[in-house]
Amino acid sequence: MAQMTSAAEATAAGMPESGIAARPVVRIAAPSGWWAIPFREVWEYRELLYFLVWRDIKVRYKQTAIGVAWAVLQPVLTMAVFWLFLGKLAKLPSDGLPYPVFYFAGLVPWTYFAYSLNYSTNTVVAHQNLLTKVYFPRLVLPFSAVLSGLVDFAIGFVLLTMVILGYHIVPGVSVLWLPLLLLLAICTALGVGLWLSALNALYRDVRYVIQFVVQFWMFASPVMYPASMVSKRLPRWAWLYNLNPMAGVIDGFRWALTGKGQAPGLPLLVSAVMVAVVLVGGLMFFHRMEGTMADLV
Image (cartoon, rainbow, N blue to C red; front, top):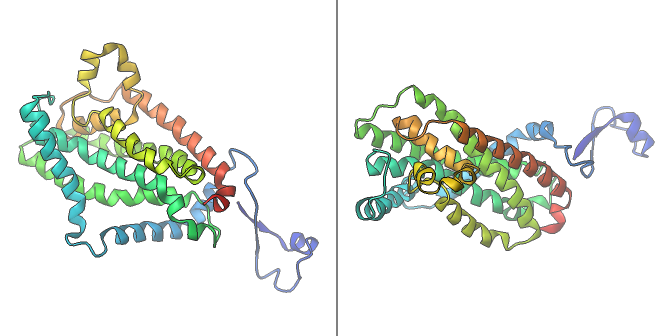
């Protein structure tokens, strides 16, 4: 944590008096408590956050043959596989929606979440050279990882809108829920990413476990099936299913854009409470580990 030191304090500490009044002294100290999170300091480093996000975007598509089309190909090809095997062959329900709309509306928010979670988990270790050379609030790293994925989300969302309109589905007033649902997805990825990125600095095998976690989480979210199937076929476990924040986000995305599916209600409220708990705990844990990250990586 960086703190400004006054001229009197600098003189008392034995620092030279020349240039003290004109040049502030920055003292870097370890966090003093679990809740001493430097939000103000993160705001002061907002330009660094901007450049990290912009660098991540440029590096992702640098020297690629088709550029930003990769942001479209992944959900489109996955949607085609789901449509063929789960829709045409398995005949899973789709809440009365065409299969391409149903699967694509679930894959766009899920692809953003999966990318943000993967990248934020590895961001501390990936920037180890930067961590050991200069000081900056380490919270900037997971923030930049989560924000950089919004570019791919925006591209996928434009294509999703075209698909929905192509099937003559016109979104109604419910589309106003989209910013709140996107914010919930961002906070979920950030909260879990804070925990895993700090743990990854301690135990490097976390980056291998995260691949399994993302795969399992997708099966536990209504990407390939409607959430109504869980409440109908497994009513005893519906309360546990609702603790998954992405279940409410994905089902809410479909409802907001098409009017089909479950409208946001008590399950989404439960998900929001879970996200708040995970996010606050992740901020506290990450900040507590911040002072030793440079030594661990």
